[in-house]
Length: 222
Image (cartoon, rainbow, N blue to C red; front, top):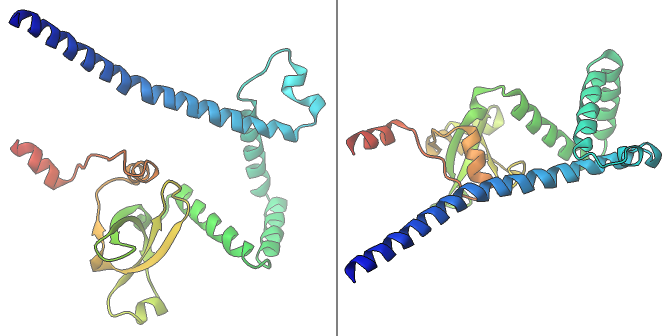
């Protein structure tokens, strides 16, 4: 009887272990597949800018998934090529001059452009620092990025050395809050910007493992 119970327990454990292993492997695979499928389908809608008689689905006897990505790539490439030459720079200057005269729109445009330029160029060591700040109130911490040291009037009218930080929102880190915080009141983190984005976008579900010196010592003591 005991032997029979042990066999049943082993079968149960085997089923549970393998089912969980299969779930852990296939779930992210399926989620990635459906996300890519959704993204490709959404981008493929860009083909609607092409006259109907010239669209790939009307010229070919079968649909071609991903055509939108190719078209988007070409649009980005040729736009980038055009805005980098003399005439393109002049047109961009005229465009930005027009935008700068439109209330509210000018602030949104400039903010998004500066944020993208900072992220893409990767310039500025300070932007790569990930920290914790007490926000929105004392005792509650938010993930933030140091964007620079405050200067001018911001620094003169504070009693401590203050820094500029950007507190992103979840799950869309491109929107957030600009804060001026005393440098000695932020908590530096050792995680990379990439890991911090995973944490933000997932709402805390994906937690990067710390590789700091304190954790290394703990691991060595085990």
